[in-house]
Structure formats: C-alpha cells, structure tokens
Image (tube, rainbow, N blue to C red; front, top):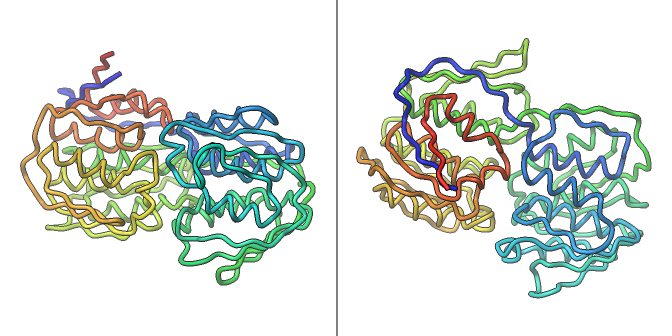
Length: 411
C-alpha cells in the first residue's frame, strides 16, 4: 500500500488524539509479566512489535519468528536463555538477520547460557536451550545498544543468584536503561547502579501489581513536527506526564526552538502542542545520543522549515530496521535537500526549495514513513509501503487525517 499526502483544504482546528501506550514500556513490562504473572498492565501498546512479543512469550519450543521486531529479538534472547526447558530457534526477517547480536550472546554465555548461531556467527537466527543459570557475573559493551543491557536486567530478578553486570565503555541511550531500572523498582526489585556496574537482586515473587503504561512519546514526535510545519495547528495528546520514564519525553524541550511549545495538563494527564513562532534562525544543533529515535523526525522538520541542522549522537541508527542515516540522506535528497552523513551524525543545509510529488521509500522502517508524513503541510508527496507504520502506530494514517493532512490510500 502507498499513501498520497497533501495538506487538507479544510482549516486546521484544535484536535485531540489518543496515542497508543509506549512500546518501550510495554515490551519491558511484558517480559516482567512473563516472570511475574500477577503483574497486570493497562494501556499497552497496540504495536506489531508488542503483539509479536506477547505471542512469543507463550512459546517454549520450536521456531520463534519476531519478524522486524528488534526489541523482541534482544529481550527474548535473554529470556529464553534463562528459561529452564525451553528449546527454540529465535529468528526474524532478512534485515533482522543482518543486525548484530553477538555482544549479548557473549554476555549470556558467560552466565552459562547455551546459545549457538544457526547461520552467520554473531547474527540471528539463534538456537537456544534454556536452563537454570547459576552464574551471576558477566560483562557487556555498553556503547552498541541499550536494549542489550535491558535484556539482561529484565531477566536478572528471576536468576537464582541475581546478576552482577559490568558495562564497558560509554552507555548509549541511557534513558532507556533508566526506564528499565525504574520499572524493576516499581516491582520492588532491589538494584544498585554505581559507576558502570549494575547489581540486580533475585526476587522470586512480587505482590499483586498494576502498572498503567504512559502513551508513547516517540509517536508524539510526528505531531510535534506537524505543528511545526503547519500554519496554526494545535493538538492535544493523551495520556502523558511531565515526569516521564521515556527518554523521548525530551521532545517538549527539543521542539521549543523549532516553533512548538508544550502545555502539560495535569488534571487529565495530556499535553497540548501549539505554535510559538520562535524558530532557530539558521542551523538547529542537537546531540540526540539519548533520543536517537526522533532524529528522523527532527531532520525532516528542519528541512520543511527551511533551516539547516546538525544532529549528532546517532551511531545506533546504523543497525536499526534499516541504516536510518543512509535512508534519510537518500530520501531527503529526492526532495532537493543537501545532506551529508557520517557514522554518527547528519548535516543538513538550509534551503527554501522543496520538490513536490516525490515518492518516499520506507525501507521496512516505520519511522521513515511517519517522519516524512508531516512534510505534506509543505508539499505533496507519496509514502511507499505505508502499512509499515503498524510496527509501532497502527492508527497513524487515520490520526494524521484528523490534524489536517489529506491521506489517499492506494494498493
């Protein structure tokens, strides 16, 4: 399916949208619920990734296919390794089999895990024989993906002797690590985080607990972009908190100089996005090492506003659903942008010219589709393979229409 996008001829009016629960929070809680069945979760994510993970957690033997779900691949690798009696082959899409996982496998093997590579050394598919892991000391490179760290921490309370984890190098995407630890703390799991060492205590049971998942801040980013690129759009999004576990909650600060202000409505836990007409003059600069998932959105916003940007801290984007830096460069150039990338940054030059009727490839990446969509306020464009948004935001195209963009779906 492809979608043809244009700015609606109808004037923009204040709109309220209900955004699905955070995929990051949901997936962590699903793992913890598998360990502690008396944990109840509300406002779970409706994403494909969370559905894949939910199904996978009911399996103990045979082939487990996570498709494009990178979080599920990392979390399930640790989960099945520490699940006595499990015998699985953990696999995914062609792209998933190109995404390295050796760092996590090595750490689990040091704990006594039985994991072998089915095809290429260091990459999925993995053959895993789960067992009761008695060892509790391991090390892990911290500069590759925070999901590797979270995978170990989430299964740690179920280990008979807990876990002592030493992290090597600079921790990447630290807010996601903090989220994991905060959710463990919500279940009264004892931990200590000092320097680059994390110790998690064994916890055999928890009290009956219900956790309500906050709505997804990454999904909110596309509406920040929409407000920035519109003339006078105002959008209210539910359910959000000023004090969020999600790193992408930094959006309210990052978008201030891109023309968008955020009003937190504490009574009903919502946020309202509105224009502030205060856009940085020439070049927008930001270190997104703690918020890499919103890099695509910000780059497209800057392009649509006619300003340059220099975004850094993006080394993890090379191993996502696609090489996101390369994909951004290719698709922005189609629209007339001058853009350069390095291993961890993107540099966009200011331009007032935006080409129209361009077809944007999504590369099996939900964030490519959604990041480019708000540009319809500035030019007509087509998003190819548009169904990819279901990975994290199944109702995205319907919600986009509600804020003033005409969405025409074609087979």
